[in-house]
Length: 458
Image 1 (cartoon, helix red, strand yellow):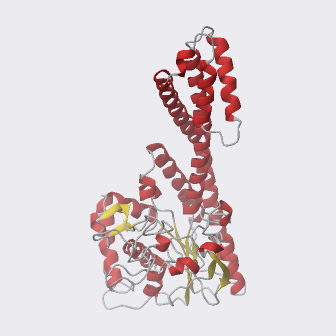
Image 2 (tube, rainbow, N blue to C red):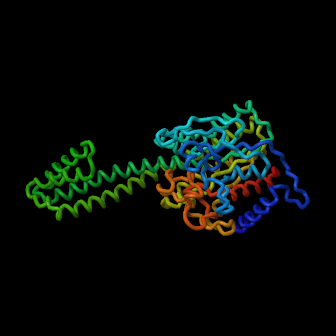
Image 3 (tube, rainbow, N blue to C red):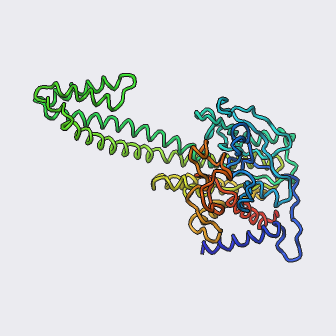
């Protein structure tokens, strides 16, 4: 039933695209609401070129999709994201980036002073979060790119400052954020879990190796103490490695009474192999345990981010005169190429995080007449599991060649017609591991358009 519903929806969207998104009643093609402008807040999914400067521009990039007008290759390669397509549908000026610039490594061409562009209302920025100013690729994460990542809270404040503190009331306001809150926190959890696993693995390695090396000595207990002390001393040395620690442990073991045979590679080699296996098992368990213990914190944080976005919509948009606010919830992140590459436990965590965020949005915005909440999760999930009716031919792989030789940033930010994978990728879902192709952006624009028509706003 669900598949049939969305298949029909997809066909309806195609009809809407053909008629320009007007009143579907026969003979009546008048637009129900005449908008003066489109204003968008959010992240990379809506970014129309905040970072199209410096080296990024030189690499023919700037948006998080397949960049550039490559319609000569295929009609779907428009280089446009959903906000640009929607602007054309409602008959307003094409969106332009409200701020452009980069705050990264100057030696790599990633240092371009931030510039506010008058009359441009595309505030969405790649890497932006809801209220936290440090998102993916911000310089404070150590990234050479130096993405500005102004949070949605700052984006809205900047717009209000630019227009005198109030919306006119006839703008179509688009909001889509939260994805970077999820990705950033998942990255932090992964790093912390890896650190916990590494520490546990190192401890397990030494413990296993010491006990094995001491077993053949006349006094195993005394030998273990001496070997352990040698390993500990070696580990404390600058530049210590598993190899240097192992060599120190073997040397200490070989001088223990009755234990000279352990100096032979034939004897200590299998011991090192077993210690390595023990370390791997212990490290994997410790990492998984850490993630399991701290995963619920991410779910709580995502619910908070959703609540914060609701507050921004109510207190900064609607309260300041916005009458037509479209809020897209988070898509099915677990079915992106990045999500599919995760283990089952992490995918379950991602689903819980996205659900927490989306639930906060639906609960907080319920009953708001001036808000249209679009269920992007539902349609993106259906696309991932039932791609045929949407015209999608690949929903699990990036269409861009992200190898260093072809794409120095390994991102759709610098993907274009010259660094795509071979073959026909025109109807693939994803440009990179999380960002949509122009065709998938078209599907999103059509889906939002249908929701606008249903709401009576188009």
